Image 1: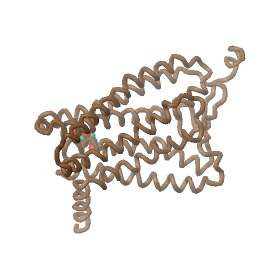
Image 2: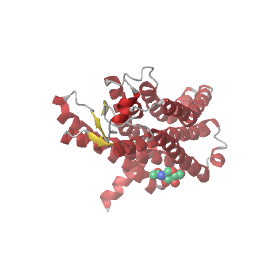
Image 3: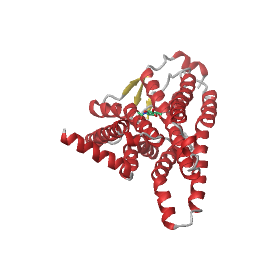
Image 4: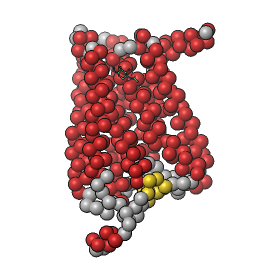
Length: 314
Ligand SMILES: *[C@@H]1O[C@H](CO)[C@@H](O)[C@H](O)[C@H]1NC(C)=O
């Protein structure tokens, strides 16, 4: 096709998110499943944030970071699910160009911030398990605040640069996105501009911003596991491992699904398996994270039962 072909066309002003169009008989069921998981995610994560803010026993770096993570999960699902719900209900699958970029911005911002928060949390665990004597001096309130603020700032910076580059692209031809939210890879495929620079930027930003929290998480856990294996008594090992296992599960699921979706060699083939994995980290992890953290955690359970008692008696 000649280069001039697309110049003559008008630029696309909206996209169509095909989402689950190929499952017409399941629309109502999907709507109900997503609605229930959205409400449950919001309720569980909000409960954790409120609990951590109100219970003095939970005013420690680990729980502050967990509160940040739960707050992030409520925003994260809210960036994706309400739109999916609306389009399942109204069958209106269009999304404006600016709406698409806004969604991409928030989704990317919160995703990148989550990488940093998970890294901060594993660093906290590392200090607690590997440097227990220096923990309280190293992990003071000020440093914790810096870690939290740094996470949000870095996440925002990374995605702002990327979206800035992405917004320079021209979209003119096909505007159907075979996904349930605006993601960068299908968007890049639709552009009729030269995307090499954006893809290069994407790669560089991923290296600078996500590789580095990922490596920090990995090293923290390598140190934690070697320290735990060196504990002589079996009960001591078990106890130490149980404190960090919830975090390890969350980290593994988060990075595992992301890697499957984004690091697959054939980027054009963004089809159903990817949608399923995307469902994992957009719907499942925000719902399951608070459950993994809280229900396996005695301190949170005690705080929860205290809070329910108080509410019952007043
Ligand atoms: C996030 O972390 C900061 C720093 O420790 C803390 O002050 C703040 O309360 C946390 N926010 C939430 C919503 O938990």
